[in-house]
Image (cartoon, rainbow, N blue to C red; front, side):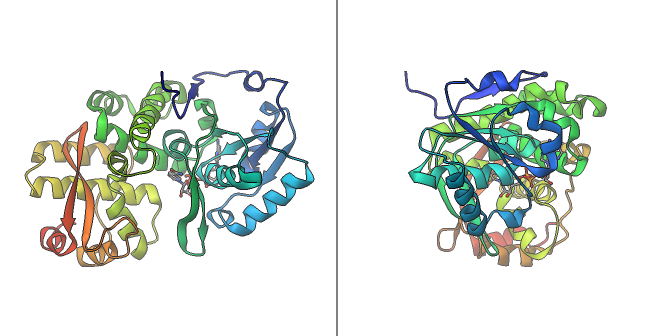
Length: 334
Ligand SMILES: NC(=O)c1ccc[n+]([C@@H]2O[C@H](COP(=O)([O-])OP(=O)(O)OC[C@H]3O[C@@H](n4cnc5c(N)ncnc54)[C@H](O)[C@@H]3O)[C@@H](O)[C@H]2O)c1
């Protein structure tokens, strides 16, 4: 049997994390400083604690961390444990993938976004100035340890970022989970024990898609649902990525209706679902600015964008569309 490229260990309740690290191996943990006080005791080995912001996803920080690893005498047998949100998994995954041509690493995501998205798929990288994730590699962690208990301390704003990606996965591939999640009472949707199985389901959807397309040649494009719009909106408006994804999914649903792929009732269900979980659905940016933004999309091929559209909740398709044609189709949407 083919070895899975990612193994997920799901820990729905409090677990003995240290027991996951057998004593015969040497580990160094790299931990987000904002959670270090609360959680560092789970990682009983040498630690590097770093202040996290999008700016620390940089070559300068890669250099600094590699220097620290040298000082700590990390060698090819050392396992790096990345503990934090998507910034940590992207940055530390890149450092571990390139230091001495690559060390084994384990991800312990602590934000919802990192649990369902950033820690899965093997994309590790850093930014170059304003260009996001431009320097990077594809390399899989040895495993991703998903412990929803970390979410108890996650601020609401950050929680919503992850919900946007989680619900996106259900719209792409799991109709039943979508409705099960949306039908939960609001309080339970915030409860880490209740949402643990939904996290596993969303992470598994990403894992399955990535396993079928490890270096983004085909099916993996489905994961971009809402993101082409979101990136174009983020170029103009200073809003969080999760908010932009909510608006992006809404616009993708409306475009799908316009192209007769999705029925209006189902589109309305998607929009009300996004609003129910606290996401924005109305675009603050005019459509001509959005379509101008498509030209800067790094995933466009010439004048064509591979757009992810929705056939029904639980099924999405990738459709190549000319940017000029998109201008006509979108001009009056909001
Ligand atoms: N590689 C991929 O496939 C992929 C996919 C999606 C996003 N990303 C990247 O992920 C990054 C965003 O990730 P993110 O949203 O997790 O952001 P983040 O890592 O900045 O974390 C968000 C905030 O939450 C704090 N935090 C983390 N865990 C916490 C906890 N348990 N309790 C309290 N606070 C906690 C962090 O200190 C930070 O302030 C971006 O850089 C994006 O490019 C990568």
